Image (tube, rainbow over all chains, first blue to last red; front, side, top):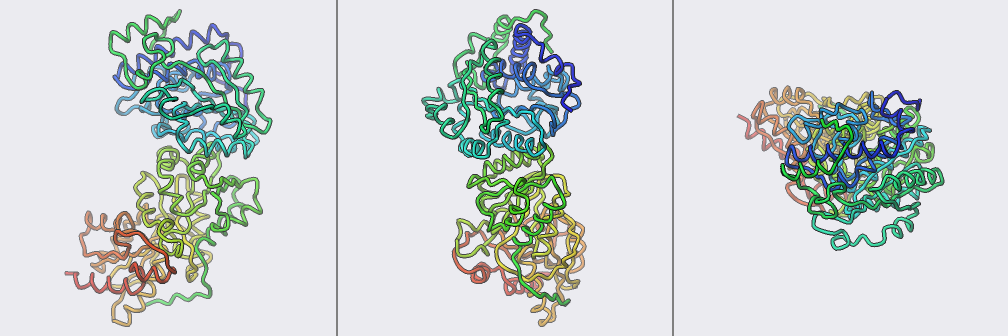
Amino acid sequence: MSASTSPAAEATATRSVAELKQIAAQVRRDIVRMVHAVNSGHPGGSLGCTDLLVALYFKVMKHHPEPFDMNGIGQDLFFLSNGHISPVFYSVLARSGYFPVSELSTFRKLNSRLQGHPATHEHLPGVRVASGSLGQGLSVAIGAAQAKKLNNDDRTVFVLMGDGELEEGQIWEAAMYAPHHKVDNLIAVVDRNGQQIDGPTDKIGGLGDLRAKFESFGWEVLEANGNDLEQLLPALEDAQARLGKSKPVMILMDTQMGYGVDFMMGSHKWHGVAPNDEQLEKALQQLVVEKASDY
Amino acid sequence: MKDFPYTEKKDTRSGFGAGLHELGQTNPNVVALCADLIGSLKMDAFVKDFPERFFQVGIAEANMMGLAAGMTIGGKIPFTGTFANFSTGRVYDQIRQSIAYSGKNVKICASHAGVTLGEDGATHQILEDIGLMKMLPHMTVINPCDYNQTKAATIAIADYEGPVYLRFGRPVVPVFTPADQKFEIGKAVMLNEGTDVSIFATGHLVWKAILAGKLLEEKGINAEIINIHTIKPLDVEAVLTSARKTRCVVTAEEHQMNGGLGDSIAQLLAREEPLPLEMVAVNDSFGESGTPEQLMEKYGLNEQAIVAAVEKVMARRK
């Protein structure tokens, strides 16, 4: 049941950190090129979360890209709650075999399956729920995790949220529900980049001590550097080791918005702005891949 | 005018509870979620007999809609239960994105719709829910008329793949539809064939339309009465066939005029067969506290209001 038939999924266990770094660089090239091509989209958070999504789809998760099964029985599932970082999601899905890499060129264009924010409506393989309106993905992931329990399916559900997104009230409804219902087959990740559209999160929303907040709700909480695969991979292993013990697991993942492109790093300015021609060239010069395979 | 005998009165929400319990026995994929209103939604029997498939969400309706969407991924058929107000307006964006736009097989089951919720007042009496739900692309909207029909509808929607809004209520009303009926989504039910006026009613107003039909008969008016239990997709053929015969139409519902059944039928007639139409519905107003009977009278939702609308629309007929 859980044995993979996909080349992308099969190779996961043996893939080295060096290989993952090459994939991450290629994904980052995709992100800046996709956003540049349509002069719209969200490069900052996408670049910041690239290492996590590459780690999940190319190393950690057991998943079958082809044929895509919406129900994902016997597979690990990933949900993207902060749907605006669709460029990284699409690139990783394409490069792990869910759909042709060439389709990345349709991002945000008319009649595309690659909508501005991820959707199931156009039947893009790999997307299991629409996201974009914030705060909803954690609830959906918990529901999927509970369905897995009902199905006696021992695989894991992952969900990624933005830190600014935690200002949404539904997140806290879900945060209260999951420990109460012992949803211990769930790993939630917060992209703690400290930025949101109007400025730094500590200035806008008052997120405060997230570890204390989630621990008091009953979560198993760990922290990780989300832009260093050497640290992130062990953190994901640590998170997996904490599953099955009556508590959901939360990773507070520190990232830098725009990671990998120096002039985009660490500022909310690149949340939803595309690079111009000159900036794209500069970015691509920094995102070096041994054998670039741009779409 | 046909006779519609009944031996008992029951609440439509109990029909939902009975249907859900039967689904528990017949369909292992059916799961139920409730936001702290098990008793009000009559979900007790399901909770008792299928505890592993029941999820108490607490007073967190937004989370409930997301959980339900997630449970469909894995093949479950979630039925959510709370009041109509908290099933729709409170969680509109969650339904829109995570359920409707995502095409998830969630059944949103909503009790205490309309003014017949009674004494709790306007905060809880939603009269906009049909409109909110029917505006969502591909959302099916059902408002059955009595206990038996609500039970049959509850069972039927489990076999339909896609999001459904099932609306029912709190007060006891005559149980006059057959216990063994087969519920067909989108198929209007002819109750009384007539020639002078078409009355299209939904939910609690179906019985009021039958009472009105008897009063009209005494006045020598032969009313055609059709139960539109499915507002979306609307049974276009049934509506047009009847309207073309009688040449005038009255709609009746426990809902705002804006966005309700009357609005759907008015759109259809304006496009296909412009004919005089009168709507028995709440006219751009919130409800208030009172007994269900008092409120139905004050807000013009009873048999007298239907009779008045019929007389008005027949006078307008050319």
